[in-house]
Image (cartoon, rainbow, N blue to C red; front, side, top):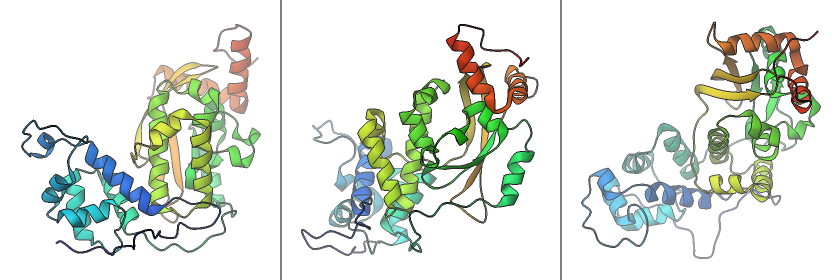
Length: 320
């Protein structure tokens, strides 16, 4: 199993993409492996801990190599980012030793064995099929939208605007979940558990970066958020990754108060870079009644709620 990854001469660097700035895949691979190793303790993986002073947190490289069945020199080269010729079997063994989740395993594979992508103009907009737009419009009472690369919001329906805000009022480049979560105060107020939303957002961007490290627009987004948000910088440094899935979000809407909504993520079969996200409330619940009220207000719901709150009026009500 101990195969020798191709080494890179000292001082040399792999190309990192366009001159406009892209993420360095070797650095990403190195930091991801280092942070995954640091979170494990010997007792977590069945190794004896003799109580000796450990200079670094987590497992030593020698311990991880032993668990994966590779030489220390081999694993060291891989953790330094030199993984061009690493086999899928070795990556599987390292993933098991590090106890990676499925999303983390996929991320490791993307970083170590990147797939060739056809070059696409960076300024080219992501297109959504007209039938999908019609589907969104037909989801009466269900907030729904489609996201693309870099957490861009591509299209949405009337109920999504009522719950999250009318994104048509924003310039196209600002219709991005990561940018809104970290840079717009109203979204910090919207999410009751904002910290969880922020972690999920960064974890998704990490997955995207692993698949597309040569995307200059993604690199520019990460750079902007790193400069403007201390929370983003801290979370980005953890190298945590997570796939979009399903769960429950608690929102604090300015018009109807707190909402508890379940969300589902559907990755489109003919375009894996686009996902349909829907939200729904438990039938008969206060949140279901709140959604019904928001449907009567339409896209003006959030603006009306903010105005009422500013004037000191009750948040909930019906349009006259």
